[in-house]
Image (tube, rainbow, N blue to C red; front, top):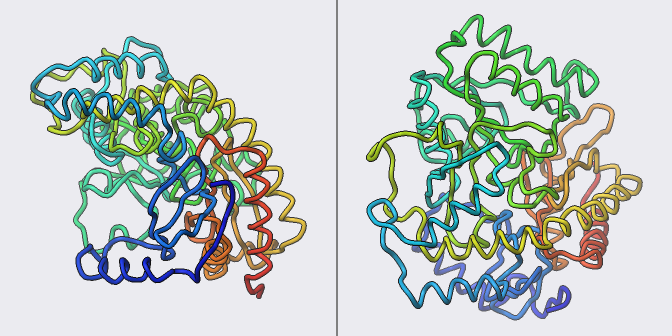
Length: 442
């Protein structure tokens, strides 16, 4: 596979048949943006069941960090699978889980020594972090941010505030959760500079939430994404996280940093929070940590993660095959892919920014490394959200052999595998350009 190659109409006949079967047996709660039925993947390309080849700028929602079926990851999975598939790390010991804990301690974005709790997904990692915060501080309240996405299980959903559809019909939620504005400086309602906008968001916590709704000594933790993912790929100024760190220390709260989408080398650093110089109390990981196998992790200093046996556990969390995949993934990221993400990401961001000069729909381009967002607007002055146009752009890209996904109400996210090359980045920008030409401009 070396480039988009469309052999049939989309979806092709085999894809149509599978989609019809899917509609009868798979939950209707799943979101499918376009009719892709994948048969295999290799590097930054995927092939569907009809032989159509696509350039992938989704990486399975930032999961296939090392590319599709990287041979070193596949070999690690195969080697471990031939030894044993499962022996619950909650009740027994096995070396792959211990080794992964050691690898995570070596890369964690805070001082050690560290301990890690192993789960199966990002939402489970965040559930563990929230429970740990309450247990450790003996406090109950949690502060999160508007636009945040932390998962769909009840604790994680309670701190999520991305889309109404994700919350509608599931209340009441876990009590004691409060939301504050995130530093979306592109849309600052007060028309402030980035530094002033960030300060205003934190002023809301310090002078509104902690004065009128919850006492500081009742707040266990603040949970935050270094870059909001589902909320629209929003990159706040570094000072936002730095002042947030100061605020949590002032009041004895834990700072939980959700790196589920932004971590594992995607931004050109192992963790996006490292760009800001901030050290969290707890970091959560999933998605790209195991190149596609289900694994979630919450890591904290050993003194913080000191809860006794039985307080929290998981039958499948830290599965030995997933651990083997994660160890191989971390090695690849450290050896070359993190640097590649920084280099190719800067090249790709520059390329995407050129589209602003050609297409009025592109109101903003932002990102770090290979975590890139385009915000579409109908008017650059009013910043009216181009929602239907965003959805149309996603579909037009698919028609041309490029896989992208939406983020927030009107942004497009570009999260290719970290093996992406400059040539592939140029190809993606070229297809985006063509797709933008095909989207009606109001």
